[in-house]
Length: 276
Image (cartoon, rainbow, N blue to C red; front, side, top):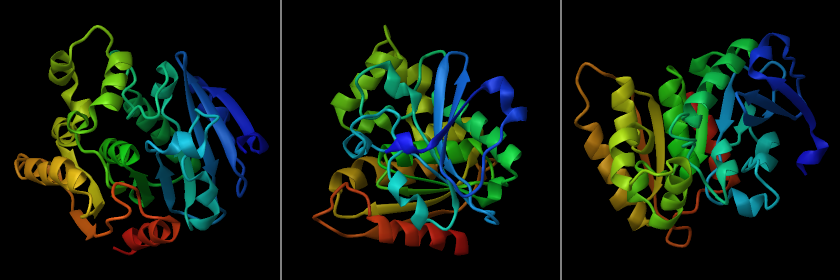
């Protein structure tokens, strides 16, 4: 399906010459020192709001020929906002359904995605205050970190991971083995804690972005291992840090478990966060 979209390929140094047409989806591929950063973009005429979407663990089932993965890309016409979907280049390091933007020991891919997005927003004339990062599960994890990098933006997250060492061991270990080769888990936690724990990342930035956190209360694993520790750790933020509002919205659906809300509910929440 991605084959039908126009593709634009540039080097990171060529932003000045970049032109993205309005009202049609395009795939932008940016080469930055040997790493390919891919984005699916649809800019809407006269729309000042931007929604940036990251993929969770189910993206490989939605797009079996990926990566790149642009989870929920079929929804782009349902959002009022202009949209940017980003792919995580960590997925090219090996057979991974999800990479949490970890990159390599030398390069934190989420940080580089944030820097590219900042350049894109400036080029396309979108202000950070009008940007919302959305994602569920691992996409929610990445959304909170990206919002932490881009001050003034917001994060809308659904059943996110807030610390990778509290998630399922096998997929996390697969990423650790590829991203941090030769390091023990203890060494990874000690050296890269601000990459794998959202609150530790916020502390490193001395900043907590505005977050709208949607959680299925019926998913006990998420509540126990991610939501509650996240809230507890936020209580110990330094008073000198800039901490924006964090709103928790609980719903209860036993059948859905960790799965994210569907399209109608998600679209509604993207509109609700704008009003709030």
